[in-house]
Image (cartoon, rainbow, N blue to C red; front, side, top):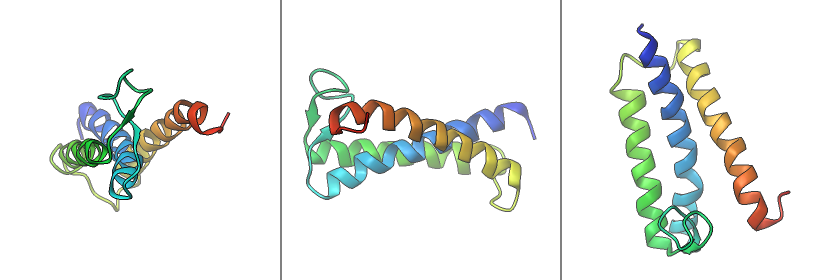
Length: 104
């Protein structure tokens, strides 16, 4: 496997995790922070904007995980790299959103 496949899997895991809070907030009808809010990343976006943003993140995750190289769920390296990317994104999101929701 080529080195750039691991980079794609890392970011694929990050996009997958980033899509979850946006998509869930959107489908439950709650406003949530997004890059399209004013101010960017701090203001609240409408629910439908978050559904679209979460779905876009899922599309990028699919493209990076399923279309780059040969991602296999039975290969621990593939899962580990995608999992580390997801974990890094989850920690960054917890710090970023924690200041809005009392997590810090």
